[in-house]
View 1 (cartoon, one colour):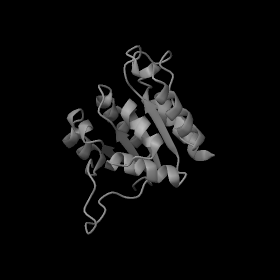
View 2 (view 1 turned 90 degrees about the horizontal axis):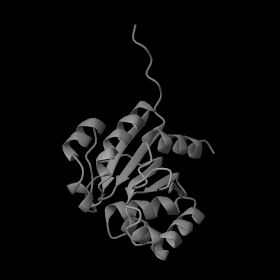
View 3 (view 1 turned 120 degrees about the vertical axis):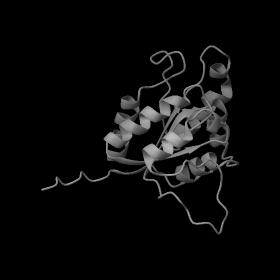
Length: 179
């Protein structure tokens, strides 16, 4: 007799930006699947250069999207119940806070922020390089937090690029979803 499958928590979009931390996305996907999420990966156009797209598609069973579809095309991904932006770049954080949706990734972030859906953002870029001291970044983080986005930014705890471990991100997500 077969064992009943544990129920799925829902659909999780992992939005990966162009970052040297992007290869860590695969580990986050696998741990999210163990936690019973149906995972879809969306990336920025530049992020496609940092990810193993065929591997992620095989792992998730979904296409990795980086561009908008044509209006007459069907949506190939199920609607998300939660989002994780990892790694989030300086550029993505600032454009998102301003409501700029000139890419699929930013469009989804703006849409789901407006829907008040559970979102976790993990900015990952080199600390001490100037970007982490730019006032726009801190303003954007504060604004996104005020909009309900859970931002995990503790570079002193996760040096050198705020590469927060997958289990910490997922624990935060599960706490956020249970609220």
